[in-house]
Image (cartoon, rainbow, N blue to C red; front, top):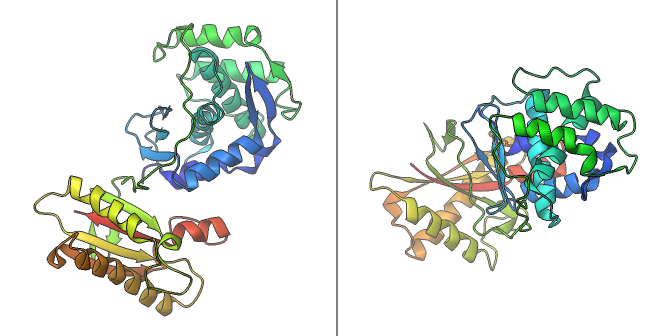
Length: 325
């Protein structure tokens, strides 16, 4: 399975990041900021998409989208560090920090290096990542491996060796003088599901999704209820509009309810089916989709996307997924 949202959440939610508290050319790298990025990703204010470039992940400040590198889930330590690197770019965007593109990249590499050193004093660095090795040497020079919470302020002049190493990197072409964009994190509407190409069981069928829209159950239903809440209609209209724009003539629309693992398995299965049916009934009643297109079903607690052992994980698992294929 390719890397997805939960892999990014696992990386940026690593408790070791709470030990960090230092700044690089004005960018304050600290555990509190990573926690905020975790919440923004969890709430789909930063979107996560699956990429197809091996070893290369990106963060787009224009769209607030993190595209993962091509790797298998769950990621190993080095691939987790790449995700932490991109989340560091998101911190800069979130806090409107103005800095040159190369200073921005250097700060992210330095954060990546500190993360690696805190997890493993002698991390294995794959071939082709000389920039990371340079960042690790600098991190040790600044004592960030032994005292990452020192609140040390690292100036641009001190990261020049890393900037120069970036100049030699074949995949990096930004001009040193250019200012890296920081637009802040905008509210996302709709909250759509980025399909990651992996097969997912939907109702009674198994298929590869091509269009998806996910809505947290709390936005649609009260606790232990399958009646749509007042105000939930707008979210479903957004979902319908998103699906309609991409709907192909041969598509069916699968509406699947999911729950966490609180309660019995039979009860959860029934509740998830009832919630999916309520969404289907709304689409038909409002003439958003013809009933012949809709395939409601419920998977209960069978297909979690997060750890049911935490409140945050259970909240992610309670969802209604609308997919066309």
